[in-house]
Length: 82
Image (cartoon, rainbow, N blue to C red; front, side, top):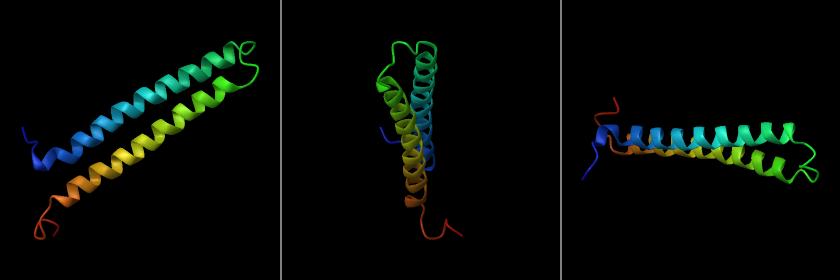
């Protein structure tokens, strides 16, 4: 089953957008829970974990955007770029 060449980059962008939004939601919820239950977080280990999840989600979104744009421009012929 082959994807349509025109929308192949858009599928990659949408997939990475969903993964990044889920990671951002999990990271922000974890960060808010840490601030509420600060007696449990004495070593700031969970804060580092939640900020790492947020950073990884941002990186995943940028990487997915780059790969989607690369896929869209790679499949174009020389006459389609004009």
